[in-house]
Length: 433
Image (cartoon, rainbow, N blue to C red; front, top):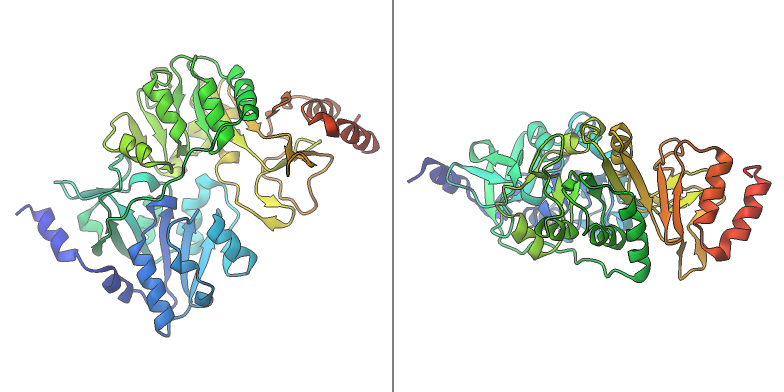
């Protein structure tokens, strides 16, 4: 018998037995989104409810999979710390059942390692290969740092997890215990693309030259932008999140990665969330590599690519050019994520551009997303000094290098026509124009 298979069998236990190893006052950690453990965390939550456990702390990012761990009855027993919220974490945060640490995405590995210091790490991984390695799959992100920090490592093997190349492996000899849970990964269907999305996507595509390296965010606007890039040549991908729309760009020959300054021939990412089609596409695909986020999102690494184009979205922007992508007024909504990492990285790139794209209005056209000042209490995600392009369905506003007056006028010009007079009046009262 292969020695690694023998070791695997020796370490294979039930999720319930792993949960028994985690007691009160333990700081635990899990990967991002679809790479979270499912059986282990659910078993810990059940144990915490049934037994007299308290103050188990769970560090996570964009938690979407386990549900039991967010049960309000666990408050004080199973607590949460996050740097980016999902719907689950958002609700818990609003009800004081979750703590939030503001952090740029590329710095989160160090936040976990030096500030929070998790003692336990558990994750969903791909089946072990003949050499004893598991792939961390779609959630490489912060895993390497967590593995280095944790005193105990537990893995949940899932046959549905794709084996993804790059700096994305952990060896059986590093692991304390293993369980198996063959459950389909959570899927994120592609957004339906509207006519407005297509207009914005076309504006974005006009700013993307051939041979550029791109980063796409998530949602209908980035997907529309990807569709609009179909006539481009020799694009490259270096992105925090691998998205569904990137498959089409690769399969249609738009993305070749041949002209990249680094990682030639490879699409680089740190996580993925999409459909089964995407997970199948990623599996054992040597043209795609995932690396830890402190490398992928490092502005200095991003800046090594010529013609780097960053494409993200936001909640609102004011006439000063300040961008809010994290909160609805004082109400927390998400987090910085990688937006600022890529804005700064694109600024370091030769001929790089960073784009913030959004609809001009919200709530069925009743609210302008371009405002005189940000909604009271809103968090400034990207400062006015760093914002490059803002795009709506009404055009493109180039802000970098422009005066305060020029910025205000440019933003008013791409606001919805129903709000332009109101914005102009406010800008005059604020002595912006």
